[in-house]
Length: 230
Image 1 (tube, helix red, strand yellow):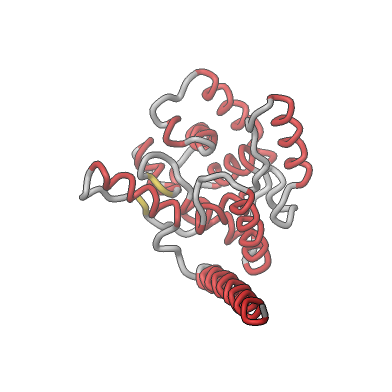
Image 2 (image 1 turned 90 degrees about the vertical axis):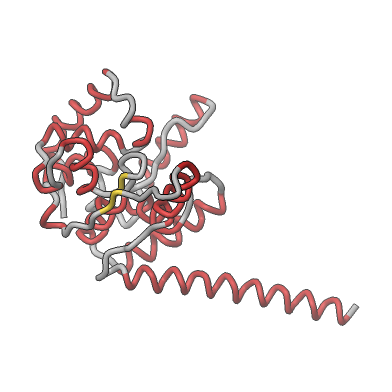
């Protein structure tokens, strides 16, 4: 019995050390990306693997651009559409989360998320689209790391550069080229609003941008001037 108890303690200690090592690895990447552009994210790796199942030579559209080279219209549009309290919260919009829970309970299924831009960035950088309590817990931990170590300008800069905007399309520059044949800096208000409303399901909306989505884009465009950007 003593030997069994000793082995259990060793196994538990080993698991604790593995978890600690993993989170130190995450922290190291968050620190590095405070100054350096991410070369690849978890979502990019997942989507590239999916594309290469059909075409072994497939590549992603992804070009990093600095914050100053992204249209302020796009910054305002994304904040208006995704996280209007972005500059004020510390990673979590508790009121938004509560509203999302209430709406999902009313509908009997997940129809609305309460994730902030910081949470979405954490997921895109390190995690997967799969939904689970473990993933949400990891997302929260990474969000706290990002909010503690980066300022809001850097968070928005990285988010706009790595977020998925279509099948194999990542970041504002690739999206602007793909949909409007312009640069991220050249996006106008209407173009920015349309890109912003695609974010919840970009691979679906790149194929079908119907009247309801167009109306939503018009609402976002009308609210953009109230969005505060870092």
